[in-house]
Amino acid sequence: NAGVTQTPKFRVLKTGQSMTLLCAQDMNHEYMYWYRQDPGMGLRLIHYSVGEGTTAKGEVPDGYNVSRLKKQNFLLGLESAAPSQTSVYFCATGDGSYEQYFGPGTRLTVT
Amino acid sequence: GENVEQHPSTLSVQEGDSAVIKCTYSDSASNYFPWYKQELGKRPQLIIDIRSNVGEKKDQRIAVTLNKTAKHFSLHITETQPEDSAVYFCADTGRRALTFGSGTRLQVQP
Image 1 (cartoon, helix red, strand yellow):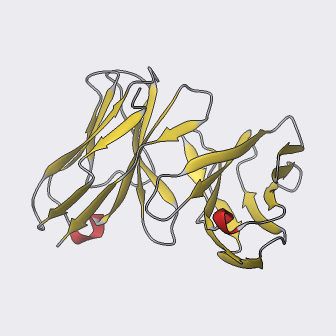
Image 2 (image 1 turned 90 degrees about the vertical axis):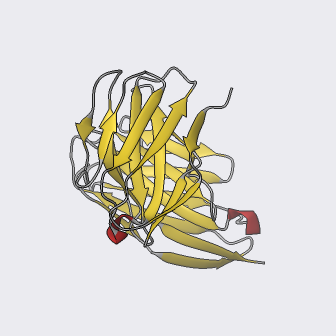
C-alpha cells in the first residue's frame, strides 16, 4: 500500500521545455489535487479533480494543464516552462470528507 | 476559504514551554479547520483538525480551539520538544479545496 506517490522527485528544465508530473494513488479516493509550494507562501491550489474524467481550476491555474483519465492517476502538465514555475509541487488526495493526504513532492527548477 | 491569515511567521520557544499559533479566516461557510506539520524536505502531515460544531479538540500535547464568531482558530502545543521544530500550516475549507495559511516556522531550543 504505497498511498500517494509522485514521479519524478526532482527535475531541472530549461525555459520553454515541457514536462508532465504524475501523481498516483492506491487509496481509492475520488478527489485529487495539485498544489505548488513557494517559500513563505504556503500551498496554493493549481487544479483539482472530483472524479475520473473531471478537472477544475484552482487558485493559480495559468501555465498548467491536468488530466484525470484514470481514477488512480492525476497528471500535471507544463507546456512551456517558465522560471516562475520553479517550485515544489505536491499532489494530494481525499475522499471528500476534507482530510487530504499528500504525496512526497516534486522539486522543479526552471532555468 | 477565501483568505487565511496565519501568525506569527516565526516562533522560537524553549524546550518545555508552550507554543501558540493563530489563524483567522474570512469565509463564514468554512466548517473544517486542519493543522499540518511539515518537516524540512518532507510532505505536509495532518496533526489535528476541528470541525465547526466543536470549540476545542485535544490530542496529547496538541490542541486546537475554534471561535466561529470571531473567525479564528489556534494551535496549542504544550511541553514542546526539539522534534516539534517544523513549519506548521493552518487551513480552512474552500469551496473547492483547502486554503492554506502562509505557515509558521517553530523552533524549539533545547
